[in-house]
Amino acid sequence: MFHDAAVTVVEDGKILFAAHAERYSKLKNDPFINKALIDEALFCGNPHHIAFHEKTWAKRARNIYASNYAALKEPSQQFWVKTFYPSLKGIPQTSYWHHETHAAAGVLTSGYGSAAVMVIDAIGEFDTATIWHWSDGKLKKKDSIWFPSSLGLFYSAVTAYVGLKPMEDEYILMGMAAYGDESKARTIKRMMLDLYFKPGIINLKQNLQRGLTDTVHFVKHDPMDIALAAQMIVEEQVMSYAKKARELTGEDTLVFMGGVALNCVANSQLFDLFKYVHIMPNPGDAGSSLGAAALHYYNLTGKRTDWTSPYLGHNIQGSYPVQKALQCLRENKIFGIANGRAEFGPRALGNRSLMADPRGGEIKDRMNEIKKRQKFRPFAPVILEEHAKDYFWMPGVNKTSPYMQFVARCKAPNEFPAIVHADGTSRVQTVNEHQHPGLYELLKRFYDNTGCPMLVNTSLNIKGKPIVNDEKDAMDFQESYNVPVLTYD
Image 1 (tube, rainbow, N blue to C red):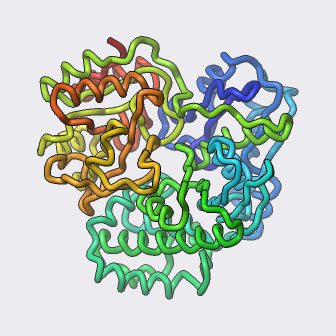
Image 2 (image 1 turned 60 degrees about the vertical axis):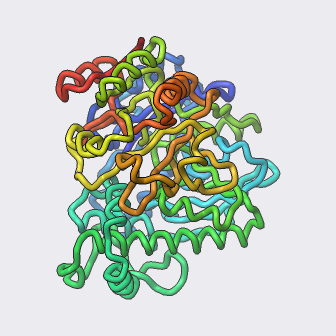
Image 3 (image 1 turned 90 degrees about the horizontal axis):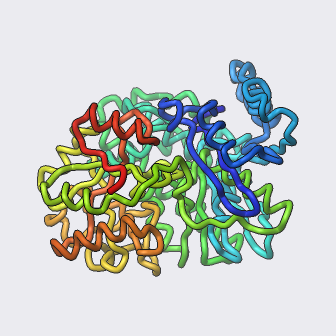
């Protein structure tokens, strides 16, 4: 009901289906579930129970507290389902606390027996940041930061100020930060801290839900410098709260969730405090559909859901198009792949991807032109797991990054200009044969042919539009943008 609606279906611990509403409505960040999404979910069968990711009464109480009376007119999730989906009428419903579902989505997909759990987002009902301890099969809250103190709202307010779309383009702000002047950014950072923050961790002076105030202080400054200042603050605040999480739990393993957990630059620093870090590939609100379902199942049975991969959405059947992709690479073409089950999360991980050879100097500009993105924005590499350490200084001890949640400094940036950002880092996705056999085979054969173990990998969409979902979307993309989209060999 706020942004990026989603549905997850769990049965006997198995995740049968999980998908974003926007992929069906074709409206980016769609806050409402829709009939096409519900119909596909119902292919799994009628549910015995429906779990929601927030408590409506508490959200309404917060809006009254914030004098946001217009929000009180919005229908509840329960009303929405009851009114528009009669096939779900009479099915029992349970609502969980928003941050509890974030935490559960991370913990119940982590495989960890115990862990510190940190959730940071824009806002739940009242919580904006929480620390939990996962131990002895129980999730216990250890700390809360309440609205209006919100690191997520601060970052979204800066996103809006520089002319981007809040609650959607924060990742672009993160990318802009690499182009900022550090000296100038430190000056802006001091102003931001004086204007908006009190001493302490994520302790804001005011509600920034409606944007930055006193913006006259920033008019003369370059947006790139402003972005870097905001990024510096976020990194410092995330690390301070993570340090508190370690102190409160005594754990050296961390689960990090909430929208702020999509800030992969900040995420990479967490290995300075924790040996292991798990971030579910959909840590934002859409992922809380899985969190709510998994939490309800766990409360009933004491068993976790069987998390095996993020490939949980609409299925385009057929063998992974390895042969056709290799032919495109031989011809130095940029190409799309739309095959198998769609990724659950905002990042394409090989099944709804736009790909190319990373070695060409012109590839980045060509891909940005196709996707209608700002020219400064880089792309991510997908690399054979066993070769990642040869090309990147990977964060952490396990040297893997299957969900593109961290950045790593490239050891040979001049050789791979398409996948290296202005700060010398890349948002790496590692792949092994178990994780994705088809993508692994493509990378392995490309490596055998060329000595290069990686490809450019970005989401198969145009800026401001959802990722391709089904075969019709794939064909429409191919016809509209003159890019071959491979659905199967």
